[in-house]
Amino acid sequence: MPQSLRSLVVSVAVATLCALTVALAVVALNRPPATVLIGSPAATNSNLQAGILASGEGTVSKKPDLAIVYAGVNAKASTASAAQQQLASQANRLIAKIKGLGVLDKDINTSNYSIGPNYVPSSGTPDGYQASEQLVFKWHNVDTIGRTLDILVQDGGATNIGVGFGLNDAKAAQAQARVAAIGDAKAKAQAMASAAGVTLGPVVRVSDLSFSGYASQTYAAKELAVGGTSTQVPAGSLDIQVTVEVDFAIGA
Image 1 (cartoon, rainbow, N blue to C red):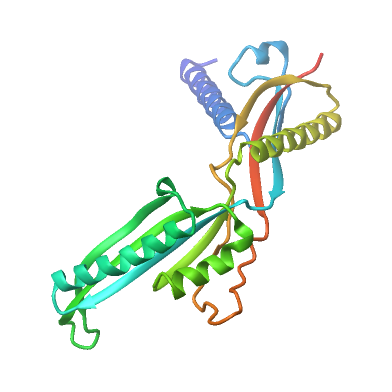
Image 2 (image 1 turned 30 degrees about the vertical axis):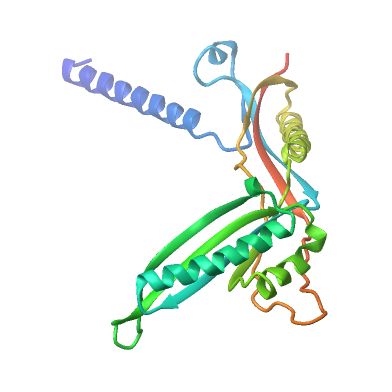
């Protein structure tokens, strides 16, 4: 074979080998959530190990036992000092009412406090100063939350208010959802193993891919009851979701 042709053949072979190596690396780094990788004993000693990778999801629904209440007051005056003094008076009244409902000091926080000029939309010039303070506190009896919001507005002077729901301790529900998620992943892996004609081996690795917390609706109580009828704020249920990724070995 001529020397030039031999060099060309070698170059093509090297280029093909490099391309194949890059392709295998990309596959190893970008395996989808449900993957079956089957290889020889030599392959299992490389980075591309034989195994079955499956994702699983688990959801547990729980009734909320905690309400997070947001209550705020606003004040407007010709000067910043006057707006601040007016706001302080309103905030003191609201805080006293919150504490009067039995809320402990440790469960009350200030989420926002601001003072600044109030601009007229048509002219863009200030016509005074606006001050606002937003409080957030925990309410542990969700069944009475509607009446609580009424009291904050009617007796506490709150001018803006909202509520979200949660759990005092979500760890137990998360543990239940995690068990369901791993079971879901195992069922998927078993189905893939059967389809591929292999035996599902032991678990090699488990990863929790969940976001912290849980889904919760937030209700804004814009029109609160006046008189004898209490505001209705249904708490519903919370879905605690867990997502896992489980790596199984190929059985012997």
